[in-house]
Structure formats: C-alpha cells, structure tokens
Image 1 (cartoon, helix red, strand yellow):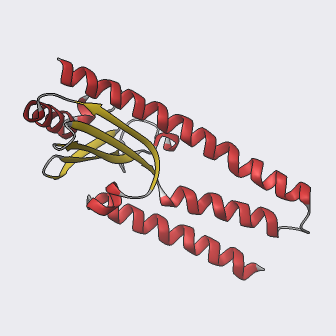
Image 2 (spheres, rainbow, N blue to C red; image 1 turned 45 degrees about the vertical axis):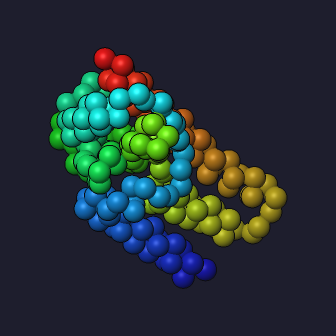
Length: 179
C-alpha cells in the first residue's frame, strides 16, 4: 500500500519537473497539445496586421493590464505561446490561473485560433489525491463519492479560473485587432 503512495508521489514529482522543463524551454509540442480547456476562433480580415499586432502583444504580455504575471514568445511563424511566469517577484502566485497555450493565425481560414491547456502536473496531482483517498481505508460507495467530490471541486475551480483568463485574453486580442 505504501508503495502505491510512493509511486503516485514520484509520478507527480516527475511530471512537474518535465512540465517545468518543457515550459521553460518553450517547447512547441507542450504548448500545442494537451488537455484542452479553451478553444476560440476569431475571424480576421488583415492577416499581416493581425500577425504584427499579436506578436507585439505576446512579446510584451507582462506589460499588458491584467497579464503582468504572464509571458509569451514566438514559437513559429504565426504561432505564439503564452504561459504564467515560473517566478513572480513581489506578488503572490495564484496557480488556479496557471494557463498555457497558443495563439495561432490560420491563413487558410483567415482566423486567429486561441487554445488553452491545463497542466499535466495538475491532472497527475488530482489523480494521486483520488488514489490516496480511495486506498486510505476500506472501499465503500460513500468513500468513492467523497473522493470524487474532493477531486471535482478543485478541478471545476481551475476550469472556471482558467476559462475566465482565456476569455479576458480573447477580449484583449479582439480589441487589439479592431483598433
């Protein structure tokens, strides 16, 4: 039984380290794939103007109102990544808004696509808590329901906080393109 706890703890730790390395090196695959929690497509008429404005916006993301704890980078031609800063000095880090994702410009459909993903470390942590809770004592239906509630509440809060931040990002981009 203790081996399962140790294995879960090691998995959470390894996933967190791998995720930190991938995000700090701006790995394109990490920012383009994952457990998608937000997806939005915005039609745009002038692709070159939109590309220039979004590139400037993303590269100065930490200077934008409401996004001082975030940073962005160009991943590829017309593909931009955003994420929460790993280290934030002078403010309390709120990991319920731990977003990472991409903003891409699709020239075929003439649209800007915003995709947001939840971190794998959060998922592995929630699964581990579920396993800890179930294996802590005898299995029963009430134990299962309690474990589901304990895992569901933080997951729903994460989804709500991250969706709110992505909606704010989408609004900023729409305003930027229309200006």
